[in-house]
Length: 415
Image 1 (cartoon, rainbow, N blue to C red):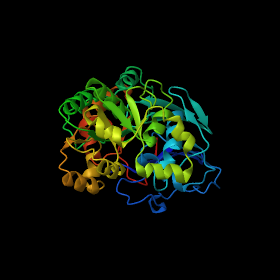
Image 2 (image 1 turned 45 degrees about the horizontal axis):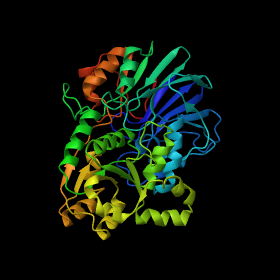
Image 3 (image 1 turned 30 degrees about the horizontal axis):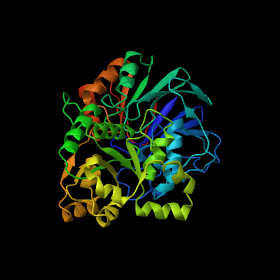
Image 4 (image 1 turned 135 degrees about the vertical axis):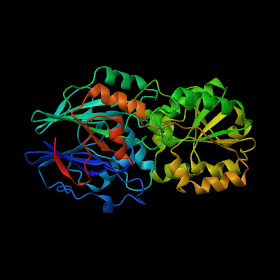
């Protein structure tokens, strides 16, 4: 068995690994680079068989639903089967109609169940559910011909599913020849630093909510389920109701998890902004709207009870909130990766906040493992070699881990 990192040996995002044995091949992740201006075919690595005509390309395995790991699926043949978590597949199907651009919705393939192995040609695949900011995320063990690769995907140890990290390090897979290890935190934290836990994020949110006289606007991804749970809990602690839009309601429903906030919960309400109402009418999503309308509210409700409301904010809310005169005493909390803000993705929000004199707070934690957690992970798995991936600082790996073997993008090597 041999492997090739097509992209990711010296960068975060755009991950893609090809694994081959006796001519038969699988791909692990097929991501869009973070600096891509659009989801375009130009970012596809040089890989044979993406048109679905090569019977030796057996499928694509996706670790989780972040565009930098799955986005380029939009450009491959639907004949190629795709593996991912069952809940992840449902979330993708629920989210795609709301989102602009090329959002792939694979129709066939394998649905992962943590710890349960399955075969793809000569390859044995074992998925392991991990703690990450994307829901239903997995690490993947790939075994063939007596050799074994463990692909970490993206993971952390400080989220609401931190028990998964403890479980994996307490009972790690055995006899791993190559660990493909993400290192997103390297260069961002010194070795001894740690990221805030989701519980600490919840406490910070509760503090801001308590000291906000008006509407609390929190800007986060509708697919960051851990964060939505933290927001919900902080809202409930401070006497606020969580207000979500139809997109978020559909994503939460798609998790299939009754312990995650849903649109019909008494402390949750649905507000449909004007831009979404147009989408509903144009696409005839009336059954979807009806399914989530148990606690539907309108703009006058937000105006009447701003101190009792936390709005899961999206930029499309700006116009509704202006027209509804809902912004007196409001506070804005940014709870996403800083890169989006710094690179100009939300310049329209910056201008809007300035126009209305709304204060901004940053409350966020990473979806990735700290250097300390990475060292624990490697010590538990004890791989024969550690191969850097998904990091801007592969040169730092030998300082932290034994048996590091770096490979370049496009280089094939024997496992």
